[in-house]
Amino acid sequence: MTAPYRVMVVDDSAVVRGLLVRALDADPAIEVAASVADGLTAIKRAGRDEIEVVVLDIEMPVMDGLTALPKIIEARPDAQVIVASTLTRRNAEISLRALRAGAADYIAKPSSSSDLHSPEGFNKELIDKVKALGAARRSVSGEPAASPAKAAKAIGEPVPQGAPAKEIKLRPAPSFVPRALAIGSSTGGPQALHDLFAALPSRIPVPIFLVQHMPPAFTNLLAEHLSRSSSIACSEGKDGEPVVAGRAYLAPGDYHMEVEAKGGSPAIRLHQGPQENFCRPAVDPTLRSLAKVYGGKVQVVILTGMGADGMKGSRAIVESGGAVVAQDEESSVVWGMPGAVASAGLCSAVLPLPEIAPYLNGLLMRSAA
Image 1 (cartoon, helix red, strand yellow):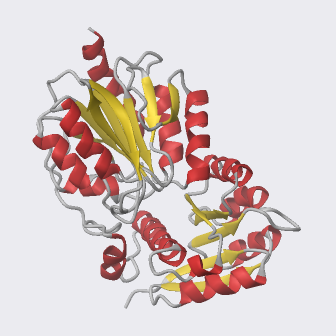
Image 2: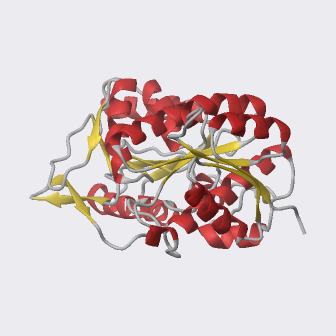
């Protein structure tokens, strides 16, 4: 039996620490190796103990999470950090800054104690993220994942991080002129999106539809950050909003975003239908709707993220004549979503993140010609 993932919990509330420790220790693939109340103590423990994943609170006395983050990474460079914060605009802004500073993922603290104990709520999300990031870390170091079969079942991931490499069969390169660009991402996605947008041309001849797994307080800020990091106007999609070429529409937190043809013109449709792949927003509903509205003229990009959201939707895009490109494993924080579409044989290319923008630029230049 392989060793469990070693986790450090950092939170100034003794009650919250106790709840997190009990939830994590209940899973045999996870061991809570340290539980501390402030960032300064966390730095000391990170330098002393073999920590693989850190669950880091934002607001703490002595030293807050954002200040401690780079020092924890310096003390334990291979550790994966999950930032935990309550759903406020201020904390969302701090969490996005933490992701830019090296945190691998974030998790929104529940607003009530009942959410902590919901089997489909906070505990499940936390455990799934710890497993996915722990497995990603071990994949890089060459260590065996802890209980990989169980972890894969928990997050619906057909190709667990650290599994033996499977030969990727690529589809022919697309020859069509895209009418729409769709991008799906999750764990590691905010930073990947920032880098991708910064490298795209300022004038995009097609609309861009983005789905990033994020709670409500975060998506509006992410859209603002993407607008600032590029010359592409990005905002949360609004129900009934007409789709305009050159703009980017981000699915709002807790809403699925689809596109429908209204009087022959595409428009945004938001709804709170059931979660898909344990997510809302999810990538699959967006892609299915794009396949109907734009037919075979959609270029999909699946970036870093845990789980397999986007695979079924990508299949619908490919079957309608569209194309998919996935981020490669080495440049992904977690190769779940891109690994799923790549291993399913749906991709025309699997590329490192820095090569995706030039690839898209070539397609979009054809569109502008």
